[in-house]
Image 1 (cartoon, rainbow over the protein chains, first blue to last red):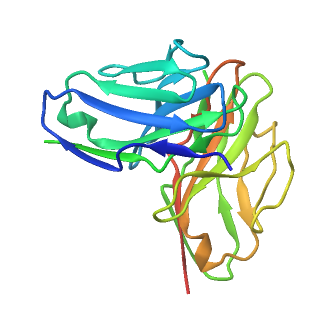
Image 2: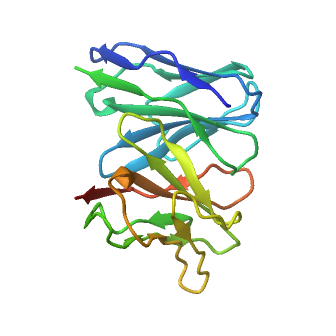
Length: 112
Length: 109
């Protein structure tokens, strides 16, 4: 079974704080993704990575950055959190580009 | 442009009734379509994909290229089918899955 672990299930941060969301997978998958999930808006892709040290912007990259220093770890960074970044953040991995995604449990971030 | 449309935010049915969750897509090439499901307090997971042509938990979905649709169907809904359902499209090589906005299915007795 693929295991995708997101380090924090719930976070509360203040506007302007720097926020790190960590995701680790144990199945040697090449591809990793960060989505945000909002009611009525579905899942929107923030960033994805097909290889170590490689990243591609998704549909809503503004206000976010990512880091992939090791194959198994993909971090999402909010340089200066804002209230409109309050959301559920989902990490996912896949073996093949465009293939089945395996999701983490999600990190619910509240920015006050 | 690649796009997935799920026209219904909420679908409420009674137990035993047929269910159809609608999904339409926009893509000029040969797409690969998926349905993902998220049960309460569980992680999002794959329900089925069109290339496998399987029936999972009684659900089926047929890709209709003429109508650019991939509707999810089940003849007799169960209460445990209550969940959020997302349709997703895999298009261009090297790109990520594109998701629709999701439909909440509520099955009541």
